[in-house]
Length: 92
Image (cartoon, rainbow, N blue to C red; front, side, top):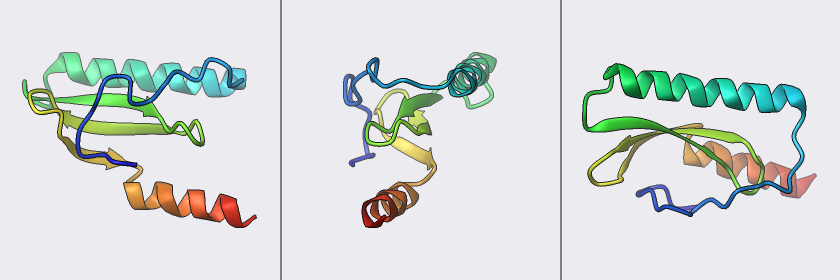
């Protein structure tokens, strides 16, 4: 998975994937928190938090993105952690 730039539509909606009410609630809270940080200006005018779902696992990913260039400055969890988790799932 490439994380150097955000491309609209890169992660398709996972409407067919059922999630528990608890998971849906956590996702809503995460989105609201990211929106609150973005509107507060705490990251400056150039950066914003972006919430995405990993299409393979439906896990939440938070990214700090440069609004002008789309460059990902920071991602949580990092790419290597996502790949490690994917490898571990394949082995089990």
